[in-house]
Length: 362
Ligand code: UD1
Image (tube, rainbow, N blue to C red; front, side, top):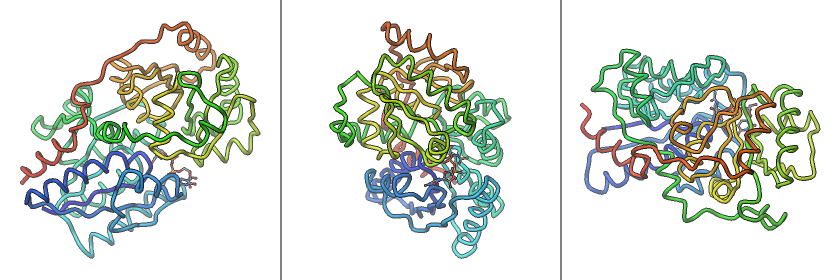
């Protein structure tokens, strides 16, 4: 069995790494499975891509399509053209895509049109918010996927509601959590820790990169001002995505307890998260990691495709109205935040389950 593994953007790398580990174990046992790692090049900065390969022991990609940058359509088109050429040179039996980024959708479409079976890891999640490119990517990818690996019951239900046959849906858990649990004991203190003298549970970590939160000056300025006002003077560490960095430079946002840094490595970022008092984010993946590490998490979005992180985990959907920030932060500092439980099968063994199932596919 030959399988292409597609990785393109930062949140893909931690989902692909454990799948490669499990394939290697299967190969060692003599199972008939070969893989080709395709990096689309969607994320290309060292600290958005290469550092993850190094820290998570991901082998260098067999192919890099170098399709980074550009508008949504340009980027998607570049990935599609690059992947189609690759498949024309050398085809594969399966194309495995993870998550919901442009690379996920682009490669799924190309593979399916070439009659290659598509496997989607993290299938079925939905926010219902079609203003986000990720939601469109999820819907399109799932509409042409052959095998669906899911992280939650709600994802299974969404797929069934969309008419996906039950025997194509496999609830396996969360590969991102495989990586988290594997590397938990190797988390590394980032330089900023000693530089500004951080203390456990006495600081806040923040990540914001959604266009809705960072592209407009007034929205970003007001959100950050409100967070700082309610931060109890705790240091707020803000590793910024390239998109946010551009905006912060233009809007000239600065506060004495706001520490803006480059995007951190995986091990350094999660070291900070694990010891934080609070995480404020608009990312989806981070809400899963904080749920497992039981760290209070405030999501600055009106919806989530991961409702289990709210219903079971430590995440709360605070929304994007700045007025909602003060009561949420008061609740935290009053010690009234929920502790949460971990969703079923987020146990570090998801990739093994995926490969065992894959080996039984026709
Ligand atoms: C992408 C994903 C999003 C994910 C996020 C995490 C899509 C639609 N979105 O959003 O789901 O949460 O990654 O990081 O796929 N850029 C750089 N260097 C890089 C990468 C990007 O400068 O290494 C720049 C791009 O040129 C662009 C901007 O950052 O100007 C946005 O990059 P893009 O890949 O379009 O989407 P993200 O916002 O990163």
